[in-house]
Each structure stands twice: as C-alpha cells, then as structure tokens.
Amino acid sequence: MLKPIKNERQYEDALARTYALLQKELKANSKESDKLEILSILIKSYEHEHHAMPKPNPLKAVKFRLEQLGMSEAQLSEVLGYRSRKSEILSGKRKLSLAMIRKLNQALHIPAEVLIQAY
Image (cartoon, rainbow, N blue to C red):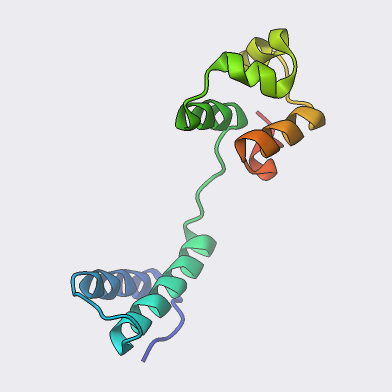
C-alpha cells in the first residue's frame, strides 16, 4: 500500500521502488504503471517540500535561455528595445526594470518569479 512520504528513509525507499518499476516494461493503465505514477507524485511532493532547488540568478537564466534558443546577445537588444542597456544588464551594472522583466517573460518564457529576484 502506498503512503505519503514523511522522512528520508521513506523517500529513499520510494526512489528504489520507482527505479525498480522503471526497469520493467510496463503496460499502460496496468496496476504497476498506476503505482509508478502515484510514487512519482509522492516523490515530487516530498522533494518540493524538502529538497527544493533554489531559483537561478536572473542574469544567468537570461544567458542560459538565449543559449537554449540559439539567440545572440544582439537579438536580446531587440527584445529589450535598448541596445546599450543590454550590455549593462548582462554585466550586472543595471537592474532589470519591470517593463524588461515583462518583455523577457513573454519573449524568452523565463518565469517572472526568476527574473524579479535580487541579484
């Protein structure tokens, strides 16, 4: 029977059970595939509460996203609308304004909660 994960020992056990299930060729909508799905949800919930990943630095997030999209820093100037500000922002000399955060969120799909952090 599956139960909520309340401590590290149970968490490690759930990971081991998940790994064992992943090694099998599960059929869709089988009891084992349902068990895998439920274990994944329980693990995700526990990790979110006890092993949360810190949000990335806003500038690093912008640079990483540019790289992911194959965009150049010049194209970032087009997104922001300010050619000279792009270098000031990426060097950390100028902070992102609310308008810039909105543009980056829309154009690069970087979560606003990442972009509004202090850096």
